[in-house]
Image (cartoon, rainbow, N blue to C red; front, side, top):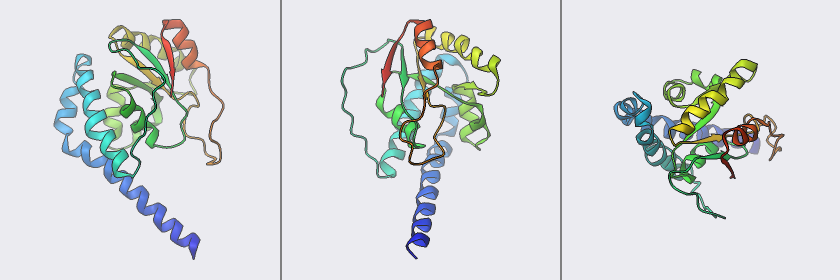
Length: 189
């Protein structure tokens, strides 16, 4: 009986999460589209994603962030933001933490998610993890975004582990190679 109730609770929790993810996208759709028409508008898109999407999701899921900063990030400086990835909320948390606009490096499979995928492919650096050429192309696309004064955010584990008991999976080295190649500081989160 307890297992059955846990499944019901988990299902309700996930439905609520997807409502919180989708509702702001629908409400602010015209503004989000305008902010993705050109790369120069990306800081406005980032502001909307951070303040009108990520923050309400975190609070709506009952996860108000408590942030302890070891150091402040300088405004107008590019960084390589790296964090482990154990939950879908990690994406919202990264947006919430950084006031400096950054671009996610993410797996191309997420483009298939309705509505979310539309914006994801317009603003993120996509990588096909099975294609060496795609992984190499990330460096070039990252350099372009860094030249625009943006930071890069990557989850070096390559995704959320299938095993819920894994708190920290093996890191892939792409984020660190990229930081060295582009001479930017790595900010562990």
